[in-house]
Length: 119
Image (cartoon, rainbow, N blue to C red; front, side, top):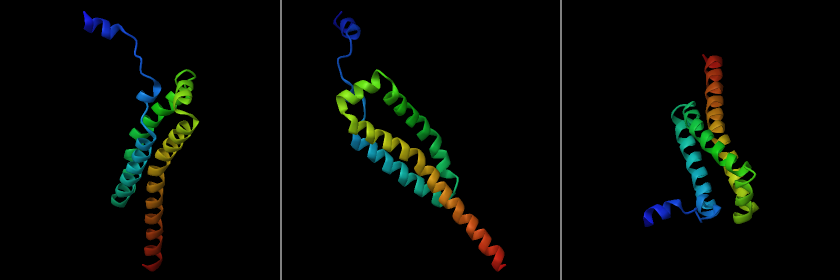
């Protein structure tokens, strides 16, 4: 009986317990950047494989922050600076794999042009 009442009780935790800390957001961004760099050194298109799950995860984060009820509770409990950091990390997580793939692709294109001129 106590288990059933515990399951039926409303969750009393706040938004801060459900959201990752800002340090986790930044560490995740650095991990994505490191993986993107390593993957782009192997093949230019490999960071694009990382981009798909990252874009999905970012869409979930942005959806929570944009929700009128949940987003307002997050802003109230964690502050506007947390929302700013979450938005910035989300945007950079989307851009970084694309930027590494693009830079590596451009380098290969320039190398091909040089070998055509020399050869």
